[in-house]
Image 1 (cartoon, rainbow, N blue to C red):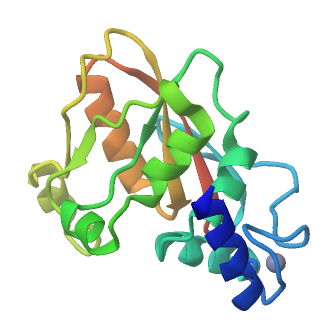
Image 2: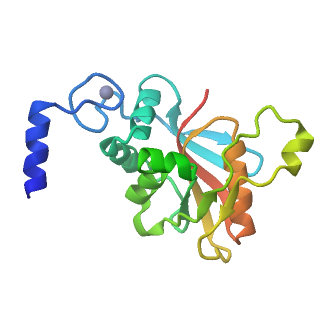
Image 3: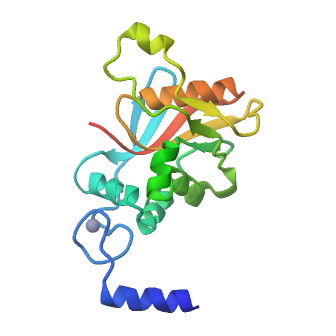
Length: 196
Ligand SMILES: [Zn+2]
């Protein structure tokens, strides 16, 4: 109750701003909320469904989410909630433990929990932060894996990966491999945005 009143007073003094533009209002305004047809991208072993292109208002909104805007996470979660197979477990792509400590939360996990509730299994853990970009093929193949699975065994369950932005798709493919080693059947991923 007090929390609600406090929020109302805060909103009056500092009106909340849309996560994607200068407009007043919490979450995302009607203009910034991605509404278009979903964009599909094919990766070697995954079909990725994105709400839009990582650009303009959507890019600003994702940065707002990463800075800790829960209202923006809620707006995205609403858009994502119907996007995975009804029998799939939602597995968020994790950020590094260091970044999570620094920000105090993990945006992808928050969105997954808001969108899919009890169907979330946050079993993926990122054990190594550095990216593979710039390394030779040989080094990439022999490098220690970036993710491990610390959740309960997946025992043939369908898994849908959840991430904020897909660029090359290498991270999603690495996560898919890890989840498959834990027994999951992984063919789909849902992201907020994809690079053009
Ligand atoms: Zn807006």
